[in-house]
Length: 245
Image (spheres, rainbow, N blue to C red):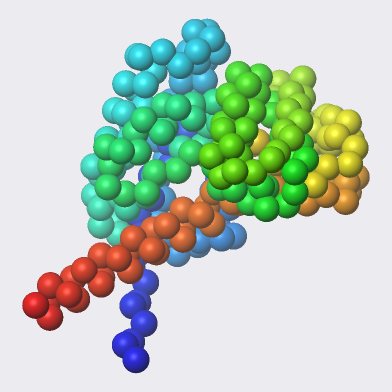
């Protein structure tokens, strides 16, 4: 039996469009993947310009490619960047357009939570506090379900006023508004808190529902860790085969 392949130091790029996404993803790394080195790229104009345009236009797609190329090209602590996680949920198509151009794992912020949610059942509540994310995530979730051949009813919900409360520094009010809004779902098989900034509300939401509550940030960090580790094993095996030959 061959010896197990040792893990390698990992360098990960985090690309943000909202200030409010930074702390939740840092906390998730501390809990789920503390040995990883991560760095942040923050462009708050992305969310503002996305809301202003009302759609993802060609210029926005180009900006995402530029951000991803920069993140992927950095090298320093733990070597070269080995994975990228985008943290804002309103830009799915722009992120997907980046993936074919890079040889490293690139994740949308919500795809891993959606994959986990589809295993819970057929009725899933989806919560957002950034309104441009609502239709984008609803469409993304249903498309993933259709591609996997699953029957799924997604119940999207925008929590008005919650993001404003969070930006004003009133985290408890944000959490209260989200928890009260989630009571509207009634009987569902699971609830996805569809933005990284919503993770802080998860404990309170869980007090008023029996359904599993998934945070996109926790699911995303675990998934990126698994993909980076798989990539490392793949490269190690290829290296071993070359040495043998």
